[in-house]
Length: 337
Image (cartoon, rainbow, N blue to C red; front, top):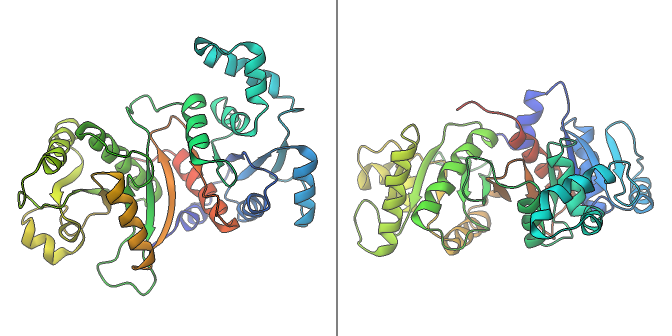
């Protein structure tokens, strides 16, 4: 049976629990998810928000601060001066003065991200209340891109139902939530980041399919050429990766179809990383896989940042929060390859 991020973390049982900052620390779903993560020893958590509101919500759920649950009120935290100075240094080239930096750090999203930047937490999670655009913009401004990454993108983890057939497997779907119409170079960057995400979160060797409406020259169009150009770039820059394209989804997923449409391919019929040619295709595909195929979709998860920062849906439940905390911890853990 495929292991979810929570299963993977519990099986690894790290001796030192990492700390994750949660920017919406008084939201009932966030508090419940944080308590579940702490009780499962997945992570210690920092609940960021107004101290009285966070304390009241903890009490409403029969808990209190301490033993892995911390409350940070940006208006009164002893770290705020340090974080404000660091944020001023980071953003003054954009015209942010010391007063503006202080005001920014007193907002929960920026404070939580600065905790990550300055090493007080391994990653941050928000978005139960804040919009995706606010979460992503804050992550880019505060945490920034990874040094070897040209693009921040997103992906979903797709987990098959227990009664799925023999061909079913856990997969990474990318990009389904952020980059609208990637160029060939951007597709290559998305595929490279998705390979690392596959290793970290599925703990499997990535087999990457660059998807299209064509398989191996069955159609000719500039949209197909974009995909084949991305394949050329990947093979030149990352000869170690198992990647193939252009492939239709059935050729990438079903072994018999893959053998027919792309004979000799190491990826066709076995892909566990599906890279879609644009956001239309990716977003539609993950929802169909989820709603008709019965797969569990976890995401969107951000990739390509210097340190983990992740977005929740505003319709999330406590279990989604716990799962995203586990994802964030796994992203912060170095993996081979």
